[in-house]
Length: 452
Image (cartoon, rainbow, N blue to C red):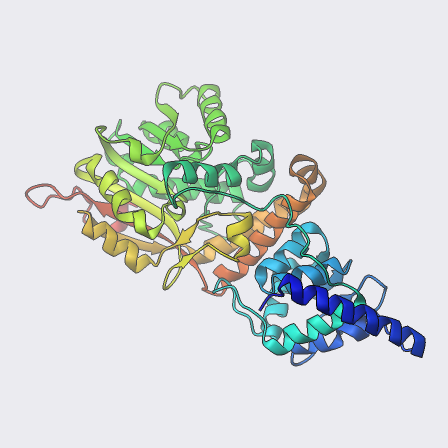
């Protein structure tokens, strides 16, 4: 129910006329008073936190979670033209709305009071709320053509999950500078869920524990010199861990030139260039090669459910009998495509998709794998994301100087909301281990998980 341009022009004229009549009657009201019906429509029990508006007026009670600062009427325009999470995200990214306090807690409090679910279909307000917003915007003179979206919004074209479009989507997300990622991810330079095995572990220690778990699941300690393919290798952290600690010969592939440069230079610096090779390559270009084991960590979200059969069949064909695949990916019950009016699709992961882990298991089995183990690390991702948020906030000024305030705001919003989604089991993350069984049924797997 977003406004058409004709409706906006008519309402704008009505609002201007009403504003003039109110001023003649001496009835001019504060922004908070004008927007009271809007807040009431969105929050039936009243605003759960303090809202401050551009004229200095406020509404709602103070809350330990934080407060919302609406800095201009442009925020109202954004919400009227995109009355869903995208409109709100645009207002936050552009700075028209500032969320102050513990962002994860503030988002949770606002969502609960408005009865809006996280990571579901982009919700739209009830007609009552939209009408109240329209009337208030008209009285405030805040109608007009839609404000342009922030420049940080993604624009990818072409066939969904074609090589060209996938490369463009990866570029949007990863080509924001290695230094920015170093600030967020810390020394581990690992952009996936860590594994906090014991209380008090640092993020770097927990990432190392995750890398070691993957190496053990793949059987690297059982035989030196195995050839490992790391699909979506990122900055090379897992690949270099496998080469350094288990003598593996690793090929890491990525679609990000920045990641490729970092991983290659790191291998040279650590004296591992003879055992760790990094390529700018799509997984669909690997036919004809052979590997003993394969890891794919945080890459499957870019594949898409319509392409996952090709993905698993391609990886299956690269393995010999007894070979293993460890697929580590975010999942969602019922699956979810990051498309349309979704904040995360427009600003973070264009074309991303979270596939139900049950569908992942079925797809692996459909394409020849025997699924041997499924493990959830959901709670660990909550802790990982909170560590990344803390890193970004601690280095905020430096991050803004590197990528700009709008992109830094987008990342802070994305990671804070994601921490909530994992904490509340809206989404999860699973490691699924599959084996290519030999002609006589041999899997090469240990009898128990004890060696992991």
